Length: 224
Image (cartoon, rainbow, N blue to C red):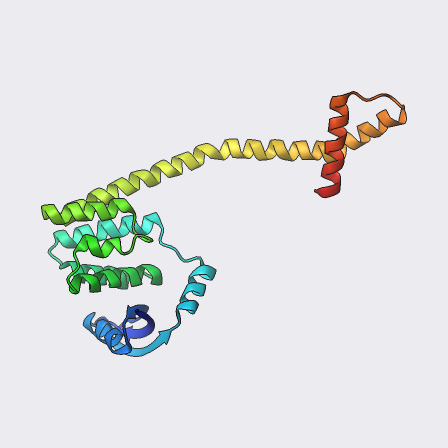
């Protein structure tokens, strides 16, 4: 089972980079970091519990916009002739999200160990959408990974725009429902009791709908 290690290193530009790497042992983690062209400054093991708690409390997650940017970036790099593993490492080092960084580096290591591109991506289904994994498999079979990633980015971008449009369209109905419920509660809690006191003071026989309203008003006042 892989352990997680935190590292601090310096890249070829002299910039300090931090990240996490998953490997079977400390030696393997060190070799993986050195293979990325980094000069290692510090390496320490990190417990899985701390990693999980950090992700929960920081609410770190990979957004669709991150995946779209990744797909476009790797498509351009592959078209320029950059090797797949090198492209993954360059993109990983440019991101500030440790979850995304770790996923890309893991995919690069899996490819180096003999896994296909789509197989490596399918192991990260919690981060990458199914459409990206399927199109990457098609790209492998056709020899056009760059085109597959362009198509995936375009598809995800359209879905993101559709989601944003639906979200905007639903804002007014949601606001109307919330405002109506608020007005109803105000009427039941503050207005209706005063009207009911007037009727009860006159000793009038109340019809059933009025009694139901009175019970609803008393319930809201007592429990809400």
